[in-house]
Amino acid sequence: MGGTSSKLPKDLLSEYQVRRTHNIFSELQDRENGPYSSRVSMEKVLTLPELKSNPFRKRICHVFSTSDMKDGSLSFEDFLDLLSAFSDSATLEIKSHYAFRIFDFDDDGTLDARDLEKLVNSLTGETDDTRLTAEEMRQLISNILEESDIDKDGTVNLSEFQHVISRSPDFVR
Image (cartoon, rainbow, N blue to C red; front, side, top):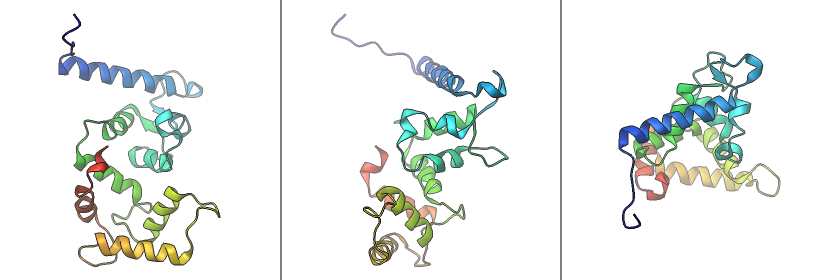
């Protein structure tokens, strides 16, 4: 008994994870829309401990939401995609793809100076005590682009982003 550990077969583990995810989703469902509402509001999703203090929490909901109303609400499939992308078993390619989309604040397929400024402000906070000066921000963005912008077009595209991320083993964690 004490010398071996039991493991669930992968198919049972996968089924358990989907059921557990569905239970979490069901707990979040907005009862005002009825018990069979097919979506969970962004406000409810943001109450999850995993997202509560994430500076990108609203962007995460918007990126994973398939809502026609662009309100950040999530279907069960959206919710499953979100949790899968942030799981330990997600590949570097999947994680970097979604990170890029989260950081692409204007959804134009590139990270430009405005996206990078919003990214930095999200990470450092936007209070007077933590905000970078205009010169510090300009220099930081210049450094990021110098390091990441392989084709020197003034933006970082997905493949350039993935190239930079591939050199950072801590990213997957």
